[in-house]
Length: 254
Length: 254
DNA sequence: CGCTGAGTTGAAACATGTCAACCGGTGTGG
DNA sequence: CCACACCGGTTGACATGTTTCAACTCAGCG
Image (cartoon, rainbow over all chains, first blue to last red; front, side):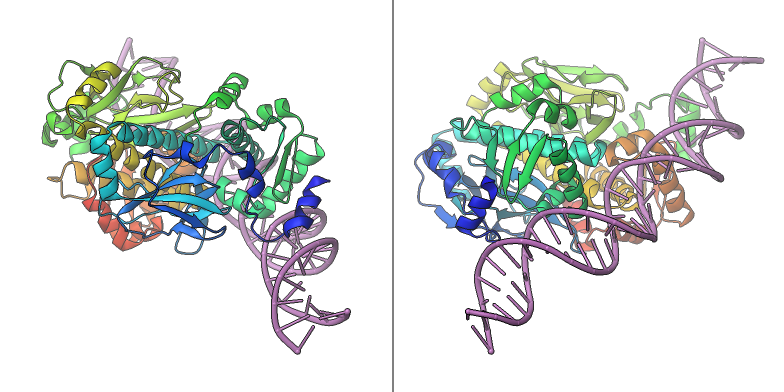
């Protein structure tokens, strides 16, 4: 099984750096919010935070390569992943200049990010108003994704939730790397992170995944996701097949 | 008590039109995204949709007065309220021009809304780039609210969830109508709608509310919410008291 | 005057969480 | 080079929170 190959090659329990994925990715520049601004480019290694809860620096983050999880924490340590960001996403936008971030952003793979100080953003948008429009579009997209997740967590069963999440991540991945037409991908998540995103415990996520595997719908082992039966996955996820198809067309915003 | 007056006057189980709230509201113009554009002003009566799922008209909606619920539906009728919008909110913004709305917007009270056709929006923003900035800010705010709800639904118990929702709505209400310094307000929701927002059944919402009432924390009866013990509510909601205070300072964005 | 919509309550069913033991692989320190 | 700890995953038995189903209240309305 290929999962084990990968595992052996680069260490099963170290964070993958997803260089494999990167080789087929669109060039980093394609995802820039501000076309020629490269001064803020920064590399963040897997597992580190791009920014943490409470961050109040005057900058936003434009993800150029890699996967990032946006999360919140409760005092007692409960954690919720509210969004998975892909290249092109704009992170750390706060609604008021002064308010500190209520979410953190953790790199799931090694990541390339453009850090854009607020003054740079405002000066560039004066010259190119399209920047703000793109920013708004990206925010609208994030909102819609968040609304999707809300319905999922609020109204779907555990089984539906994880099916829905896998389907979403798979289609977003495909939209990003259109070359990849196979039903297999590197999904740099642990079962615990899937639980944090779906509002479940990792134990229960495990049971659901085992069931889906036994039923021949999907396999997910050690960061490798394989869609065996896309139609049944769509059905279990409870998505209108037409909408599921539309997902494959979506703009690669975040 | 005013609730009963209102109740008697206009029928207890008919949708309130919240004219009472409106009398102390800031003038409608204060909430306009485009300062002097009044052509799109429209009135929508309680219970009707401003727009429904699948709406693909080329316009966005700027809520000027009243309460609106943004919701999604699953095929089998399960419903999730993903957001409550207050005056100032900008609704129906889609990330791609062509994509139909995946959410609907239902008026919870009689509502005044400015319908802004996309061409109007774009032409005005060319003249006044601030419009797009305000739009982006509003979207960022909606995102943050959605993230809050996500953590609530994903990681909190039923009790915490409804406490959190009541607290949120109360603080947002206060931010809107700063005159109202009492711990009482008209909250134009049924227990079923609270359930749809928190991912619970109305039966369970009822039990939770009864418990909170018996413990002398809040009362919620027939659209009148009364915070008896704010501190314990904050505690039950599991919000950092400092953050709860900060909420009272927040911009009145939606 | 019966109907409807919102709310209330109880008993039983069920989905998910909790706790605990265990596996296999990897990296680390002796 | 081995022993060990650690991390992610797997499984079972049991506990519990929430849902489901059902019956019943109350007020207003046609």
